[in-house]
Image (cartoon, rainbow, N blue to C red; front, side, top):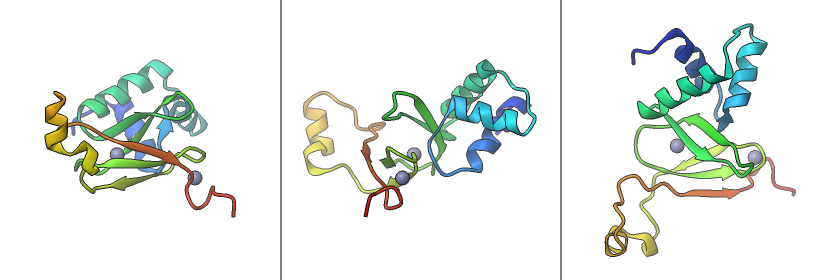
Length: 126
Ligand SMILES: [Zn+2]
Ligand SMILES: [Zn+2]
């Protein structure tokens, strides 16, 4: 990857955490360690990383886009709505959404990602 210094700073924050993180949280993390980066630069960097396929983005249950460094192979997400931790699911699509069915309704299946939102073990009340 060849990115600007700003993008590397954003990348470092993403690499250091396993949860889906909003642009504002990344911005805060950088400021708290003394990197005076603008929110605009954070967003621009995130878009570059997403375009480069290095980072996944999804719309969190709080209505904010959240970003995470994921494995490069296609996968779905189990997302905790409280701590935004995510588990990658590499199984194929459930039967009702099989490739043939999707083609029947005119959908290409190459980039479909499913996000299941719930509570992780740590956040579940026992
Ligand atoms: Zn992912
Ligand atoms: Zn959780």
